[in-house]
Image (cartoon, rainbow, N blue to C red; front, side):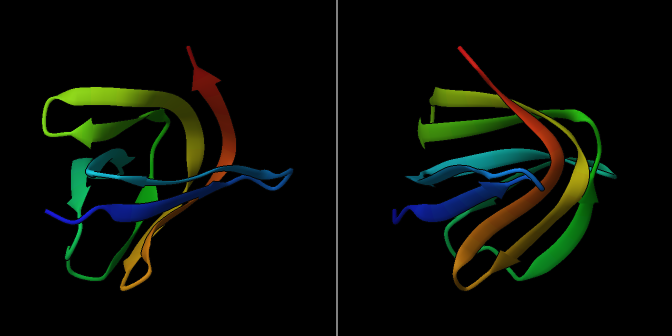
Length: 88
């Protein structure tokens, strides 16, 4: 399966730009798993954790976010967060 492109941006800086198998975001109505080919959607995000998967079972990166918006388009997933912190 193809990867999806992911961009994470805060008002201060571009935090991350990467390709991933799947990204799970804390949507306002619950966690959302985003894969390549996902239907276009725009949603608010709640405070929580973004999980980036390099394959179906491996989380390669975790990021805490505080508020913002997420948009899925043909270009991939873009998250505009008020605040983001990369976790080890």
